[in-house]
Length: 230
Image (cartoon, rainbow, N blue to C red; front, side):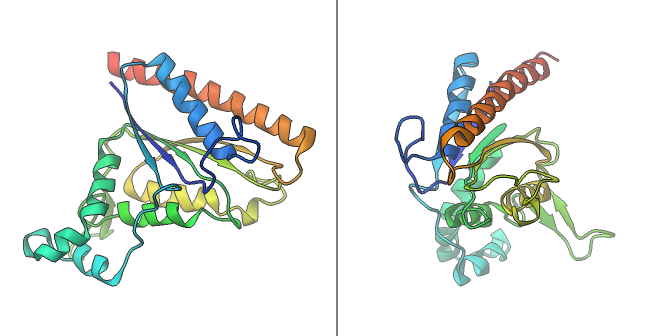
C-alpha cells in the first residue's frame, strides 16, 4: 500500500475546474489524487491543506527547541515543536508527496514556506555532526523511496527550464532544493501557465498540464506496483 500525502498551498480554496476564479494548482493536485485513487483504491491518502490552515511560522522559541537535543528538552520545548513534529510525521510516513504550489510573486506562497521550515528538522529529516569527517550535514530520507510530484500554476508563460522567464522562476528551486537536501530526489511535475492571459492560451495550457498529470498517475502507479512486487 502506498501512503500519499496531498498538500495544497493556494489561497484559493477551490479548483478552477469547479469555480470560475478557482485555483489551477488545486485543480491539478486534485486531479492527480482522484486518478490515483481510481487506480489504487486501497491506498491511504492524507490531506494537508496549508492554504486553508497555514502552519505556524518558525519562531525564536521554535529554533531554541529544535536545536536542543531531545533528551535535554524542557516541557515547553516539546509543546512548541508539537505542530512541527506532526508535519514531520506525515512526511516520514508518506511514500508519495503530491504538492499543489502556485507561483506567488515568483516564489512559493508563505504557508508552503512555513511548511518547509517546519519539516526541515535537524535530527529528524537531516543529520548534523560538526565532528563528522567530510560533510557535517547529511539527508536522512535518502533510502526511504519517496517520490515528489510538484504541480504549479503561473500567471505568465515561459517559466520552464531554458525558457524566457526561467531565471525568475523560484518555485521549483524553493521546493526541490530543501526536499533534495532531505534525500527526496525523485521528483516530477507539471504547471498551468497563461492565467493572466485567459482565453485559448490558458485553455490549451490547462489541457497540456492535465495530460501530463494523467500520464504521471499512470506511470508512477505502474512503478509503485512493480516495486511492490519485486
